[in-house]
Length: 301
Length: 301
Image (cartoon, rainbow over the protein chains, first blue to last red):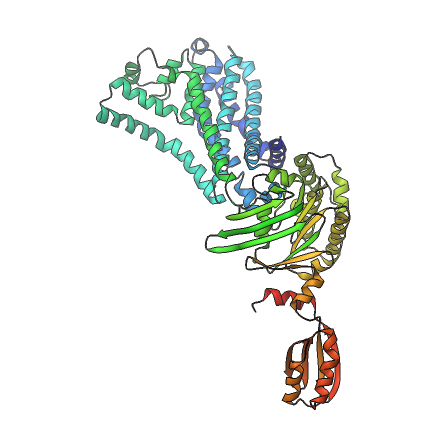
């Protein structure tokens, strides 16, 4: 239970920095603004009926929010967690920490928990406060979907905390941890998708994939990107079926690529269902932390 | 059972051979002073004991357990004041000690521990504003948590004023009277001679001496230096002194002669000088200081 002492200490230390409070404020502001603009001031209003048909105000909210949360939550998680272990090594507090009977695995795990709380709590607080704003304007307040989206967003934060803590554990210096985490973010944001498109394209030339295979390969590789996995899972909360959500991964905003819809057909293999996408997302939580633990366990302080 | 047992421990950092085969046994209940100039390998040795760094070869056992494989078990029963550590600047002194108490799963009163190290009036202050001496005291309080069987103190006096150093020695004595083994490193001999049963001297990664202070004195040479003022100094007289039994060395500087010799040989030295035609005007005996002793071991000979 040594990780518990580490997690508690870490969280206690982190909240003193006022980060938690500033972040909670930021998330409340962020989540509430589109809701308030849309529902109280009628910005970008659509007919009420259309909204209700799609599951009400929550669906619109998720649609509006997910692009922004997919960008913001990961970078904030990185800021919170990239220094989790490197900072302790550079300020010498790691010596104080490891003078006590803590296993190095438990130190990394405790850090993961502590920093996860620092991102997840403000996200959940932000959603709770925003929910209070939305309720009065609700024509069809789908609580289940709303809570689902809140939990999913918190999970995205935790996944990026995991990636960052893993990199921090493996890095030799604060600088390396920063370059590693920010590089990973930019990779997911700007490099991954063009690359997967290119790879799928190449598969056609190299092994003569069919048009359907080409799209399936591209979809599969896209879903391995945690930011894309998050967005498509959010779409699953919006759309009637996982298929529609996956189709939305192609194309722009609300307008899917007709060629993709055509090629994907009506029935997707099981590896594209929601539970599998959740697993892909969770892999990003487990794998970097495991590698980070492995490297950290074997190094000299 | 020995509290600390090192056998042929070697450790290199890149091209630097920090430890070149260290063999050392510290018995249970002993207060052991670990001496050496900065950079001689003191901290590396301690870091191997605590599993902060891993030896390239050789074995290290602490309290009967392997220092690497059973490190958590070792640290459960050991209190450590590390060298070059940092404190959590946003946590109070009390929270630091509470963290140590949680980590060691004991049930102690943080205030009493802080009182004991002289931080009774700073219990709820943030450690970020502490002076080096106060940080040192705080880490000592954390080291005392759980009534450890072994105390490892790496350069504990650094940053302490003379009063603080005296209080530290008192605590070391109290713990030793309780049966605690104390392993105490320093680059200043004066800090260890008053409290230590035995000392070990390390130089360039090798132990060059392990003995009691008295034992070291005997090893270095005779106990004293005879300083003789003569009115004239014929060469024959010097040769006659050198030839005497119990005389280790003679240096002449003008009419002053410094003879290092055993206590028994003093009368013979004066006699030989008189016989050789050097009229003795005055003489005095100086006990060789421990600082000279230490220098004799740590400087290149």
